[in-house]
Image 1 (cartoon, rainbow, N blue to C red):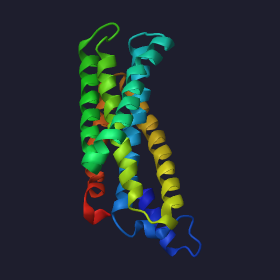
Image 2 (image 1 turned 180 degrees about the horizontal axis):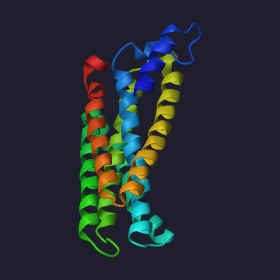
Image 3 (image 1 turned 90 degrees about the vertical axis):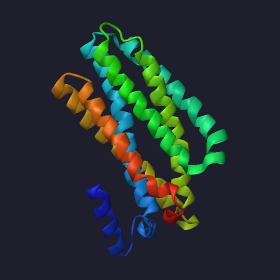
Image 4 (image 1 turned 60 degrees about the vertical axis):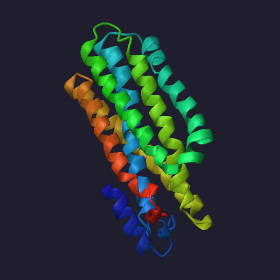
Length: 214
């Protein structure tokens, strides 16, 4: 986040900025960047830690570990469609917080399953499906709200910045949550960090749901 702030100051002073400095004139778009960083760090880190725990902690093979993530992907696809078609037109950006709540519940359920089950954790796909439902329910209203507040000449810069921050968040999530898993040997610590990142993302995107941030 410090890098984002420094980048914003650099753009304001540059004679030929890489992106439109006016994007940082109001709090809405910077809030979207911070929220994207935190959310994708949690999302990508979760998808890294779960297969690692299945293979290294429980001795599952690669195929089993990969197939276990299918409910997450299915939940993400279904909820993305439903949020875009039904929820966002009716409730607007507030849908983001419902998505993050579902994701948080899914992560906490994943921690509980990991702590209580020996052998292959059969309740795990259900917990991951909840995570996927939360991810899809969040991403549609999030990107809609983030880009709805930019002007036409800012659209290219805004989309490029969101994509770059998304990639940065994914990289940080793999490094932080994956490194914490390898250091601790258990999934509880990195998944707990992921839950904290989701809660921080919810706080960060509050300006996106208010008219003042638009």
